[in-house]
Amino acid sequence: MPTAFKRKLDLHRRQGRTNPLIWLAAILCTIIAIAVVIAGIVVFIAYLVIHPRVPVISITNAHLDLLRNDYAGLLQTQLTVIVRAHNGNAKAHATFSDISFNISFQGQGIAVLVADSLEVPKNSTKDLNYVIQSSSIPLTPDQMEKVDDSWKKNEIAFDFKGNARTRWRIGPVGSVKFLCRLNCQLKFHPLNGSYIPNRCTSKSK
Image 1: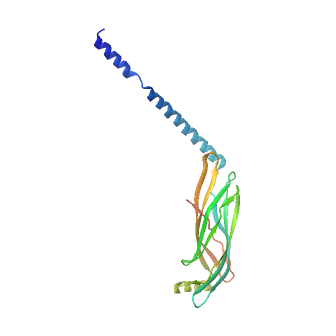
Image 2: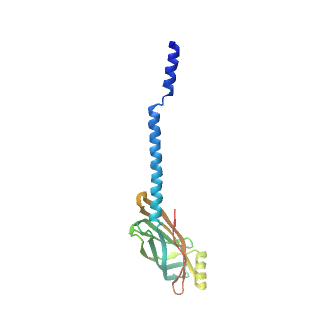
Image 3: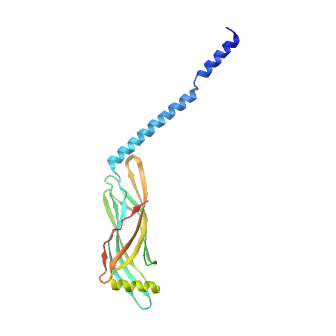
């Protein structure tokens, strides 16, 4: 057999062989793909079994203890507000942290409310009881008019905004974190201080 023909035949055989590194890469990719599929199945099954729910914060009750304004345009007020941290997960504890709320009237700040981190057991609630007492707040003429109208209509509203961070564990998935935001109005009858019920529950982000 001619030497040139043998060389071509040997070259063709070498080119027909697959590099071992390519085989190794293919095997690794297959293993990774199988692991991803298995992990997805585990997460899906864990979700069906645990059925996780995002913890929420809400206002369950409140009372206008004091509302006083004078001709000098000064407002004094005291409110009691109950904020509830609710963990609806049947198989996981939840942590609420960075709790902070602002309460204001017609854009005029009244108080900043904070609380330490708290643990809420599975399928349980914990209440935060705030008593907000303001010093004399100077009002603008427009704000004074709003207060007078509130007395006449027997209805006054305060803005309540804030947030809290929640964290809880979902089985093998690990810890999940959300930011709960509250943005609502607290309405009262100033003549007797009673709270006008209004849905005020956090939205998660």
